[in-house]
Length: 318
Image (spheres, rainbow, N blue to C red):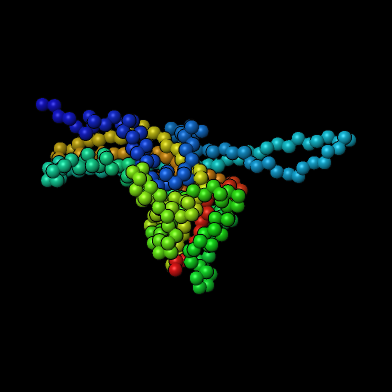
C-alpha cells in the first residue's frame, strides 16, 4: 500500500521559495519599506562569508574660476565598499505520530504552514541585534535624551522630530519606527497613534506621524532607558541565497513510537547600508555570526552618517 508522505508534497526549492515570499508578506519590516531588495544587484556566493556592496562616494572639492589663461582640472569620482555578512540559519520542527493522533490533526501540516511566520519573527530579531551593534559606530545618528531632567527625557512629538532631524535632508524619506511595546503603550496613552486599514479594510496597522510602527520587545531597555529606531526608506539591504538543501524531511519509526521532522535552512543578508561588517579576531566563532556577535562592535562606518538612513533614539517614558 502506498502512503502519501509530507515529503511527497514538498518540492524543496519550490517550498523554500514559498516560505521566503510568505515571510515578506507577514513581516512588518518588509511592509514598512525599510528593506531594499538587492538580489538583482549582487551575485549571492556559494561559498564565503561576506558580500561586497561597492558604492560611489559623493563628489567633493571646491569649484574653479573660469579663466582663459589656465586649464580646468579633471577630478575623479572615488569608490568605496560596504560589506554585508551572510547569515546562515536553520530550524527543525518535528512531531511524534502519536501527537497527531491524539490532537486529531497533523502537526507537520501546521509546522509547514507556520514556518514563514517563524522566520518573519526571527529575522526581525536578527535585524534589531544587527542595529544594536552597527549603530554603536554611527554616533552622529544617535539621539540620546535619556539623561535629561524631568519630563525632558521622555518620548514625545518634539523629541521624536529632533531625533528624526539627525538624518538631515533624508528625514523626509522616513517610513518606519521600531519601538518597544512599553513605548507603544505610552504612545497610545498620549493619543499619538493612528491606524490605517489592512488588506481587508480593517484599521489595524499602527502608524505614527504617517510612519509604520514595528513593535518588538527585543528592543533594548536598560535602567528605564528605551531604544527606538527610526528608518528612512531602503535603509536595510536584503538578499536571499539558496542553500544546497533548503528543505528536507525525514521519519524515524523507532523514535518515541514513531516521529518525523522538517528542516528549513535560510541564507540571507539584512544589512544596514553604509556600516560594513568589520569584525575583530575570532569573530565569528562559527561559520556564521550569532545574534550576540552581530550586536557587538564589529562594524565600521563607510557612508556619510546622514546617508546611513537609520537613527537610534534613546529616551525614557512618562
